Length: 302
Image (tube, rainbow, N blue to C red; front, side):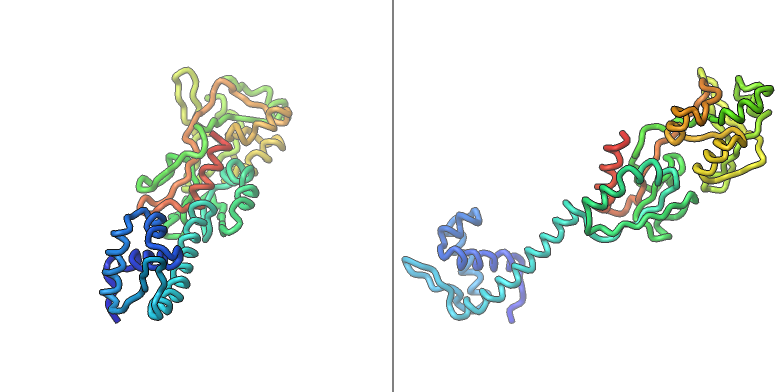
């Protein structure tokens, strides 16, 4: 059997088109080449294969017996090629395959809860696995395609795409806590050192210092407190129950502030910090499903 040469597949497609259109002229028009170029291609193909594939007359073009045999196989082969290419279109327009993402709980509430059901309904052929874990993990070593974290915690060798604007952190308390501790001052961040504060342990294992800024003054306070938590929902619930002051994302407490169940304290002192970002290895191509997910999240938050 003759060995395949460069351009063989294109030449076979020329033969297939001529047989389908039953005309050199119509085939040339469909393929965007001249009739003479098509004739030259067919002559070269027949010479390489060592058989005549077409019978040409002044009025028609029909395959020979050898051409007819080849034609049947080519129609099946090119049909499979078209199906394969169509499958690639699904990756571009409607992602398929498996996508694994590691996220902190705050991202689950802020970013995934509003869009997840809609996203999955739009991409039913995508298998999405989400692990909610506040611990900063090695996404490559753990087999994840991507992760979400606050911008400053993302490794430098990763590509990071912001999903939110800068996030505002504030200090809150329940009306009951403020009433029971009205005798303690609460006018400046230094006053926090006299209060019961609900401390927060980060995913990297460190205790978070409450960062507060006002009029050019920036503080990072190692606040006191007998309770340490690593999960925002528990911190907010504990503050709601009057245990102490909490340092939280403003967006997570907004409904509670509007209803009066929580109160912002030291309202002039806030911290605008890094946005949440989707990050993935720089040496990998962006998964089509991940690109669609990023687009939907950014549309909802930015």
